[in-house]
Length: 616
Image 1 (cartoon, rainbow, N blue to C red):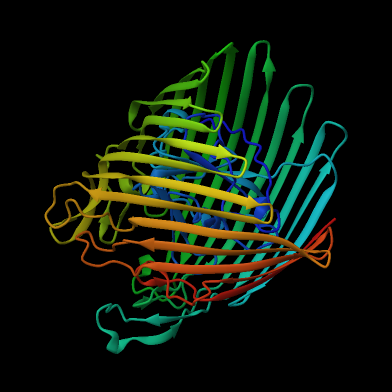
Image 2 (cartoon, one colour):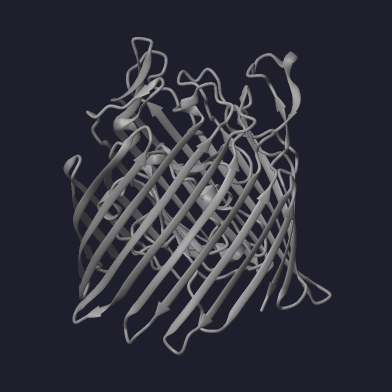
C-alpha cells in the first residue's frame, strides 16, 4: 500500500487549464500507464473532484445527481469497489463496502490527483483491481501565501473557500484550508414515470429534497530537519445531504449525515545507504441515514461507522542501475453497524520491488504477500518494462494481479430481502497493457491496449423467490484502448483530448447475458478541450471549450436497454484583473441536454457559475 509518487509537471496556462498535465510519467513506476491532474490549472474555476476525474482517460465516473450526491469512479471494466482510492497514500475504501464517494472530497485542499490504470495489488494492496487514484493534498510553501474564493451558481449554489500557507522558521511550514458549500439542487428534469418507451406520460418535474450543506478542512504541518521530510496532517468533511430517492419512488423527507476524518503522519529520509519512508494514518467514516416516512420502521434509520488504521514502512537501496525496495504494511479495519454488528479484521503485508535501468531499458518487478486475519495469505505480483527507442518515443508494457476481499456487508448483512454469506472468497483480477508514449516540446501522445480478466466476482442471487444472497459466481473480461493526446502549436493555443474504448463483457455463460456489455460500463468515452490565452488591454484572458461524449452505457444485462448517448459542451472564461484578482464565468451542459448516469437519478441540465478569487 506504499504509494511512490514523484512528478514535477510544467505549467502551461494557469487561468485556462487543459484537461490534464502534459506528461504521462507521473509515478515512480516508470512503466505504468498513468496520468496526473494538476488542480492549480482549474483556478479560479468552480469544479468538483468527480468532475475533474471524469475528464481522465479510462475513468468512468457515475453520479446519482446534483452537487454532493454519491459519485464513484471505475476503470477498465471494474466496479467502483474494485478501484482503490487514496488520500495522501491512505486508503479511503470502506470495509462496509461500496465505492468511495468522491463528492465528499473537496478540491480546495488538493494539489493534484494521480491515476494509475490496471491491476497493481503488488504495490498498493487489496482493491487495486481496475486502477488506483491518489489524491495529493497541498503542502506549505516557502513564502506566506493566502487566497480567498467565492462561487455563486445555479440551483442555489454558494461556495466559499480559503487557503493559507506560511513558513514557520527555516525548516517548517503550515498549510490550512477551509471550505463551505450550500446548494438546493432543485433542478428541472423530464420525468418519464419509469416508462422509457412510452412518452405519453412524460412530464416536467423538479428534483425535490436534494439540498446539500457541507464543510471541509485541511491542516498540514511539515518539518525538514537535515535530509528528512516530516509531515503531519488532518483533514475532514462534515455533510448533510437530502436524499430524493429514485424518481418513481421519491423519498421527500430522507437525508444523510456523513462525516469523514483523517489523520496521518509520515517521515522520509536517508539512514546510511537506505532511503526510508514511514507513514501511519487513521480514517474514520460515519454514515447515518434517516427516512421518517419509510414504510418499515427498520428502514427509517441506519448508522454505520468504520475506522481504518494504516501503517507502512518502505526502504530503498540503489546501486548503479539496480534498486531493491522491501516494504511492510499493516491494515486494521473496524465496523460498527446496527444490522451487521461490530466487526474487525486486519492484514499484515510484506513486499519486494526490484528495479533495473540499463539504458535504454527500464525494468520493474514487484511481489507481495498479504496475510489477512479473515481470508488467509495471498500472493500478488506485477512486472513492467519500458524501452526508450528515442529521446521522445518510449514503448511500455505491464502485467499484474489484483484482488478484493468481500465487504462486511456482503459477509454479514441480514436485513429485509438481503442476507450475507460468510463463505464468500475474494474476487481476483489479472491485467496487462502495452503501448507507446510520445513526448515533444509542442505536444505528445500516450496510446495503449489493455486486457483485464476478473474471476470469482460476487453477485446477488435470488433464493427461493424470498431473498437475495451473494455468491462468487460471476466472471468478466475487459479489453480496449486508451488514448490521450495534446498539441500546442502556439503559446496561446492548446488542444487536448482523450478517448477510451472499453469492451467490458459478461463471461458467466448465463443465457441472454453471456458476451454482453456489462451494465454501467460505457463502451466509448471521449473528452476534447480547446484552451486559449490572450491579452486584451493589459488584461489576461483565458477561455476554454470542452466536449464530453459517452456511448454504449447499457442498463440491462441482456443489453436490451441503454442510456441515451451523452454529448455535453462546457465553456468558460477567466479574467486576471490584476496579479492577485481573478474572476471566471462558466456554463456547463451548454445545450441543456438531459443527462443521467443511473436510471431514475437525473443530473442537472444547463448550469451557470461565477467565481471570484483574491490572492494575498
